[in-house]
Length: 76
Image (cartoon, rainbow, N blue to C red; front, side):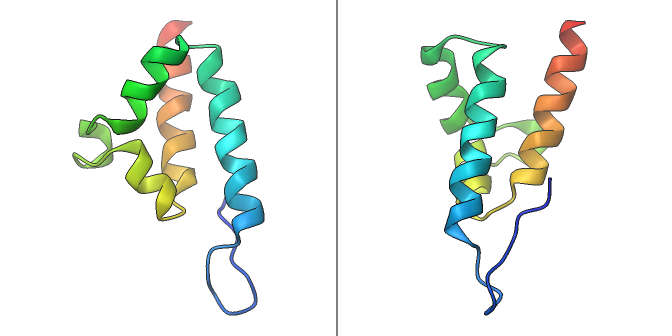
């Protein structure tokens, strides 16, 4: 999923909220609510040592979706 921008090239907050909701729903299937909190604030090597929260704030949801895809594949 590609993060959408408004007519001025700025991140569109409507899509930002939707992407965050999709991420939360997908994480619900992988971990507890407490684990999700830690996941969001913990630097991750596959994200270049950045936290999922940082990438989300920058609108880089496609990177988070890719990471979650890999997490889901590892559970199969």
